[in-house]
Length: 254
Image (cartoon, rainbow, N blue to C red):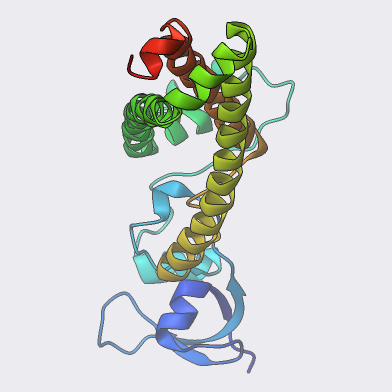
Protein backbone atom coordinates (compact mmCIF):
# COMPACT_ATOMS: atom_id res chain seq x y z
CA UNK A 1 0.00 0.00 0.00
CA UNK A 2 1.28 3.45 -0.91
CA UNK A 3 1.96 5.57 2.15
CA UNK A 4 0.92 9.19 2.36
CA UNK A 5 3.72 11.71 2.03
CA UNK A 6 4.49 14.89 3.90
CA UNK A 7 6.95 17.74 3.40
CA UNK A 8 9.18 19.04 6.20
CA UNK A 9 11.29 22.16 6.37
CA UNK A 10 15.07 22.02 6.23
CA UNK A 11 15.50 22.97 9.90
CA UNK A 12 13.35 20.00 10.97
CA UNK A 13 15.26 17.70 8.62
CA UNK A 14 18.61 18.84 9.99
CA UNK A 15 17.59 18.61 13.64
CA UNK A 16 15.94 15.18 13.34
CA UNK A 17 18.48 13.87 10.79
CA UNK A 18 15.75 13.06 8.28
CA UNK A 19 16.01 12.69 4.54
CA UNK A 20 13.64 12.07 1.67
CA UNK A 21 12.17 8.56 1.82
CA UNK A 22 12.38 8.16 5.61
CA UNK A 23 9.33 6.84 7.44
CA UNK A 24 7.99 8.77 10.42
CA UNK A 25 4.91 8.57 12.60
CA UNK A 26 2.67 11.61 13.03
CA UNK A 27 0.12 11.92 15.81
CA UNK A 28 -1.70 14.62 17.75
CA UNK A 29 -0.05 13.71 21.08
CA UNK A 30 3.59 12.89 21.88
CA UNK A 31 4.29 9.24 22.63
CA UNK A 32 1.19 7.88 20.93
CA UNK A 33 1.07 5.72 17.82
CA UNK A 34 -0.04 7.67 14.81
CA UNK A 35 -0.11 7.37 11.04
CA UNK A 36 3.12 6.30 9.35
CA UNK A 37 4.01 8.61 6.50
CA UNK A 38 6.92 9.09 4.12
CA UNK A 39 9.05 12.21 3.91
CA UNK A 40 8.36 13.23 0.33
CA UNK A 41 10.09 16.60 0.22
CA UNK A 42 12.31 18.92 2.21
CA UNK A 43 11.24 22.54 1.86
CA UNK A 44 13.67 25.43 2.02
CA UNK A 45 12.68 28.11 4.51
CA UNK A 46 11.67 31.52 3.24
CA UNK A 47 13.42 34.75 4.16
CA UNK A 48 10.75 35.93 6.61
CA UNK A 49 12.12 38.15 9.44
CA UNK A 50 9.11 37.40 11.68
CA UNK A 51 9.99 33.68 11.78
CA UNK A 52 13.74 33.90 12.37
CA UNK A 53 13.86 33.65 16.16
CA UNK A 54 10.68 31.60 16.73
CA UNK A 55 12.34 28.23 16.18
CA UNK A 56 9.19 26.62 14.76
CA UNK A 57 9.53 23.34 12.90
CA UNK A 58 7.10 23.10 10.00
CA UNK A 59 5.40 20.08 8.45
CA UNK A 60 3.23 20.27 5.34
CA UNK A 61 0.67 17.54 4.85
CA UNK A 62 -2.54 16.85 3.00
CA UNK A 63 -5.61 18.63 4.28
CA UNK A 64 -7.42 15.45 5.35
CA UNK A 65 -4.31 14.35 7.27
CA UNK A 66 -4.17 17.67 9.07
CA UNK A 67 -7.87 17.54 9.93
CA UNK A 68 -7.49 14.07 11.42
CA UNK A 69 -4.44 14.94 13.51
CA UNK A 70 -5.63 18.36 14.67
CA UNK A 71 -9.17 17.18 15.42
CA UNK A 72 -10.56 20.45 14.07
CA UNK A 73 -12.88 18.90 11.54
CA UNK A 74 -13.90 21.55 9.06
CA UNK A 75 -12.63 24.49 11.13
CA UNK A 76 -9.58 26.63 10.39
CA UNK A 77 -7.73 29.30 12.36
CA UNK A 78 -6.87 31.43 9.36
CA UNK A 79 -6.71 31.21 5.60
CA UNK A 80 -5.36 33.33 2.77
CA UNK A 81 -7.20 34.54 -0.30
CA UNK A 82 -5.35 35.37 -3.50
CA UNK A 83 -6.75 38.34 -5.42
CA UNK A 84 -6.26 39.67 -8.93
CA UNK A 85 -4.50 43.01 -9.47
CA UNK A 86 -7.81 44.60 -10.53
CA UNK A 87 -9.69 43.50 -7.38
CA UNK A 88 -11.16 46.09 -5.00
CA UNK A 89 -9.42 44.94 -1.81
CA UNK A 90 -11.25 47.32 0.53
CA UNK A 91 -14.66 46.18 -0.73
CA UNK A 92 -13.60 42.52 -0.50
CA UNK A 93 -12.47 42.96 3.11
CA UNK A 94 -15.82 44.53 4.02
CA UNK A 95 -17.75 41.67 2.41
CA UNK A 96 -15.70 39.03 4.25
CA UNK A 97 -16.13 40.78 7.58
CA UNK A 98 -19.93 40.82 7.07
CA UNK A 99 -20.19 37.10 6.32
CA UNK A 100 -20.41 36.00 9.96
CA UNK A 101 -19.57 37.16 13.45
CA UNK A 102 -15.96 36.53 14.43
CA UNK A 103 -14.47 36.90 10.95
CA UNK A 104 -11.76 39.53 10.60
CA UNK A 105 -10.01 40.11 7.30
CA UNK A 106 -6.69 41.93 6.92
CA UNK A 107 -4.50 42.96 4.06
CA UNK A 108 -1.32 40.92 3.84
CA UNK A 109 0.79 44.07 4.05
CA UNK A 110 -0.99 45.11 7.28
CA UNK A 111 -0.13 41.74 8.82
CA UNK A 112 3.47 42.15 7.66
CA UNK A 113 3.65 45.55 9.35
CA UNK A 114 2.26 44.20 12.62
CA UNK A 115 4.64 41.23 12.71
CA UNK A 116 7.61 43.45 11.82
CA UNK A 117 7.20 46.08 14.53
CA UNK A 118 10.10 44.60 16.48
CA UNK A 119 12.32 44.95 13.44
CA UNK A 120 11.14 48.53 12.92
CA UNK A 121 12.23 49.36 16.49
CA UNK A 122 15.59 47.71 15.86
CA UNK A 123 15.92 49.65 12.59
CA UNK A 124 15.26 52.98 14.37
CA UNK A 125 17.75 52.00 17.08
CA UNK A 126 20.39 51.28 14.45
CA UNK A 127 19.63 54.59 12.73
CA UNK A 128 20.15 56.43 16.02
CA UNK A 129 23.43 54.61 16.59
CA UNK A 130 24.49 55.52 13.05
CA UNK A 131 23.77 59.23 13.60
CA UNK A 132 25.68 59.26 16.88
CA UNK A 133 28.59 57.44 15.24
CA UNK A 134 28.69 59.93 12.35
CA UNK A 135 28.71 62.92 14.72
CA UNK A 136 31.41 61.37 16.92
CA UNK A 137 33.54 60.41 13.91
CA UNK A 138 33.19 63.94 12.51
CA UNK A 139 34.57 65.44 15.72
CA UNK A 140 37.34 62.84 15.79
CA UNK A 141 38.26 63.51 12.15
CA UNK A 142 38.37 67.25 12.77
CA UNK A 143 40.66 66.77 15.78
CA UNK A 144 42.98 64.51 13.78
CA UNK A 145 43.20 67.02 10.93
CA UNK A 146 43.87 69.91 13.31
CA UNK A 147 46.66 67.98 15.03
CA UNK A 148 48.14 66.87 11.70
CA UNK A 149 48.15 70.42 10.34
CA UNK A 150 49.55 71.73 13.63
CA UNK A 151 52.54 69.42 13.19
CA UNK A 152 53.29 71.16 9.89
CA UNK A 153 53.31 74.71 11.23
CA UNK A 154 56.90 75.31 10.13
CA UNK A 155 56.30 73.86 6.66
CA UNK A 156 53.27 76.08 6.16
CA UNK A 157 55.17 79.11 7.47
CA UNK A 158 58.02 78.40 5.04
CA UNK A 159 55.57 78.16 2.15
CA UNK A 160 53.98 81.45 3.13
CA UNK A 161 57.36 83.20 3.38
CA UNK A 162 58.27 81.85 -0.08
CA UNK A 163 55.29 83.66 -1.48
CA UNK A 164 52.81 80.81 -1.71
CA UNK A 165 49.30 82.24 -1.33
CA UNK A 166 46.89 81.30 1.41
CA UNK A 167 44.45 79.86 -1.12
CA UNK A 168 47.11 77.50 -2.49
CA UNK A 169 48.03 76.27 0.99
CA UNK A 170 44.36 75.73 1.87
CA UNK A 171 43.78 73.92 -1.43
CA UNK A 172 46.72 71.57 -0.87
CA UNK A 173 45.56 70.66 2.66
CA UNK A 174 41.96 70.12 1.50
CA UNK A 175 43.10 67.85 -1.36
CA UNK A 176 45.21 65.84 1.08
CA UNK A 177 42.25 65.54 3.48
CA UNK A 178 39.97 64.44 0.61
CA UNK A 179 42.42 61.74 -0.51
CA UNK A 180 42.74 60.44 3.05
CA UNK A 181 38.93 60.41 3.40
CA UNK A 182 38.47 58.45 0.15
CA UNK A 183 41.16 55.91 1.09
CA UNK A 184 39.62 55.52 4.53
CA UNK A 185 36.19 55.05 2.96
CA UNK A 186 37.52 52.35 0.63
CA UNK A 187 39.09 50.52 3.56
CA UNK A 188 35.84 50.86 5.52
CA UNK A 189 33.78 49.47 2.63
CA UNK A 190 36.05 46.42 2.35
CA UNK A 191 35.92 45.88 6.10
CA UNK A 192 32.14 46.30 6.16
CA UNK A 193 31.72 43.86 3.29
CA UNK A 194 33.88 41.25 5.07
CA UNK A 195 31.99 41.71 8.35
CA UNK A 196 28.67 41.46 6.50
CA UNK A 197 29.72 38.15 4.95
CA UNK A 198 30.70 36.79 8.37
CA UNK A 199 27.44 37.95 10.01
CA UNK A 200 25.31 36.34 7.29
CA UNK A 201 27.34 33.13 7.36
CA UNK A 202 27.02 32.82 11.15
CA UNK A 203 23.35 33.70 11.62
CA UNK A 204 22.07 31.94 8.51
CA UNK A 205 23.68 28.76 9.82
CA UNK A 206 22.41 29.42 13.37
CA UNK A 207 18.77 30.02 12.37
CA UNK A 208 18.84 27.92 9.19
CA UNK A 209 17.34 30.64 7.04
CA UNK A 210 18.27 32.30 3.74
CA UNK A 211 17.46 35.70 5.28
CA UNK A 212 20.28 38.22 4.88
CA UNK A 213 20.99 39.82 8.24
CA UNK A 214 23.52 42.30 6.88
CA UNK A 215 23.73 43.92 3.45
CA UNK A 216 26.22 46.32 1.89
CA UNK A 217 24.24 47.94 -0.91
CA UNK A 218 25.57 50.32 -3.60
CA UNK A 219 23.42 53.08 -2.13
CA UNK A 220 25.03 52.56 1.28
CA UNK A 221 28.52 52.63 -0.25
CA UNK A 222 27.81 55.83 -2.20
CA UNK A 223 26.33 57.50 0.90
CA UNK A 224 29.27 56.46 3.11
CA UNK A 225 31.93 57.60 0.62
CA UNK A 226 30.14 60.88 -0.09
CA UNK A 227 29.68 61.61 3.61
CA UNK A 228 33.31 60.75 4.37
CA UNK A 229 34.53 62.95 1.53
CA UNK A 230 32.37 65.88 2.67
CA UNK A 231 33.51 65.53 6.29
CA UNK A 232 37.16 65.20 5.22
CA UNK A 233 36.98 68.34 3.08
CA UNK A 234 35.23 70.27 5.85
CA UNK A 235 37.82 69.17 8.40
CA UNK A 236 40.65 70.13 6.03
CA UNK A 237 39.15 73.58 5.43
CA UNK A 238 38.67 74.27 9.15
CA UNK A 239 42.15 73.03 10.08
CA UNK A 240 43.93 74.91 7.26
CA UNK A 241 42.12 78.23 7.75
CA UNK A 242 43.19 78.21 11.39
CA UNK A 243 46.86 78.28 10.38
CA UNK A 244 46.88 80.39 7.21
CA UNK A 245 45.32 83.26 9.14
CA UNK A 246 48.26 83.21 11.54
CA UNK A 247 51.28 85.33 10.52
CA UNK A 248 54.18 83.17 9.22
CA UNK A 249 56.64 84.46 11.84
CA UNK A 250 54.17 83.57 14.58
CA UNK A 251 54.09 80.02 13.23
CA UNK A 252 57.87 79.91 13.68
CA UNK A 253 57.34 80.95 17.29
CA UNK A 254 58.70 84.46 16.88
